[in-house]
Image (cartoon, rainbow, N blue to C red; front, side, top):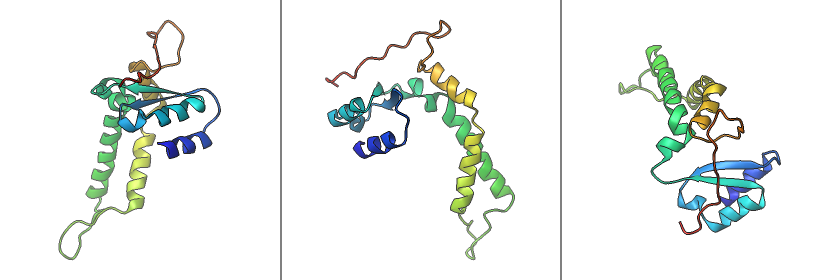
Length: 143
C-alpha cells in the first residue's frame, strides 16, 4: 500500500482527493492512513459486508462490464477465433485479443453510469439539495 500511495501521488493533481476503500486490513494500517493524510488524501472506508451496497463498482459497473466482456468472448468463439489444437482442444485467446475485449467492454460503460454509481452509493461532492448529504469522518482507530 505504501508503494501504491507513492505511485498514486506521483500521477495525480494536487487537488484535495478522497479515495474510497473496502475494509481490507492493509488499507487500515496506521502507516497507510498517515501517508494518505500527509499527502492531502482523505480515506473513506466501506465497512465490511457492505460493499454490495456502498461500492460503486459492485452496485452499477461490474455487471454490465462483465456482460459486455462475455459478449466479446462469445463473438470471438462464434467467429472461430479459438481454433483447435492438434489434440482437439480449443486454443486460448491471445493476450492482445483479451486486452481489446477489456478495452471495448470498458468503453461501453458510459460516464453517466459511472457518475450515477457513485451518487447511488452516496459518494458525491455535490452540495445541491438533490442529493442526501454525505457525512465523512475519520477512520475509527479502534477497528
